[in-house]
Image (cartoon, rainbow, N blue to C red):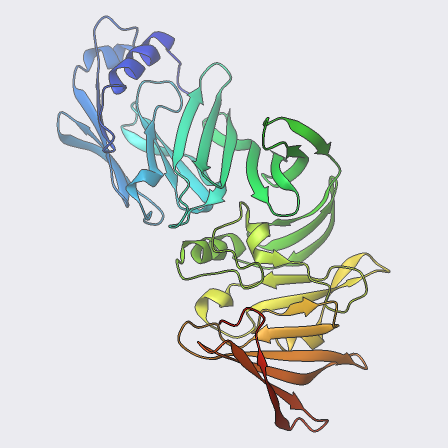
Length: 403
């Protein structure tokens, strides 16, 4: 990595503090600074300009170099300009809003941008309803870069360390709220392959902000670019192939019309595992089964969900042919009545149908349909006989009297 000059860094920081926030910044050289011989001879004014597609360095208004991003970002605020390696030239951190970011260093010697990291993990996916603005800090003493995200429902930070001229993820911390357990902080570390490992989960007191309990050796699931991993402590116990989940999760979170059917929540949970996976007990054996929200949920194709049954003998999850016959639907388990159901369509203008199944000799049997009549506070109940014929039973008034 290029030489670090603390005096130059302080002068640059002071200069940039007066710059505007329009992603266009300027910096110049002074003969009084401790610089390389080439830099001392260069008294031009350099500026960095960014937009949603690219970043450019200009000297006295003339183009020096330009880099095109791998994909356009949704908002210019997701392109951060900051001196990451303390060489007094601003670099570029590009956040794509899908748990991923790229880093580009401006190399003054070659007059070009050099990649310092591709597909770097970031704590959150972006979402229009609840955006997570990014800030970035470089620590030249510890040779780290920290990217922070914050919004009312969650905060997160990701720490990267320098290995040569490249950034690699070192740790990640995410604070978020849950209905069941209150405020939690998940602390992750990264292995040599860049895979995220949940090292500790802290339970936080709302009033004091202090940690009241800490968990380690946790059983959890991890979504990667190519799999869903079932992890026990530090052991990778099972890996289930599933491609494209982080990118797809970001698309769902950015869709303002998306609403989680099971929880009724329309704001994002902090990590892809919380949105892409669910663990209803579909066979009512006391063990949570696994459903994976697949990429076709965005493209509109069938088989939007893939279901896996928990096998108590092996402790692993086995693909579930019977439930996957209904893979285009988000299934919901009702343990009190031993029923499995799905909603055919959720609409603000149409009547909605709920189809209800029971288990019979290892197979799902359709037994009832409820047609919720919009604006009347009732649903019409239908039942199916052994041959699958439907018959009307009665109108049922909803407890609230509204729908």
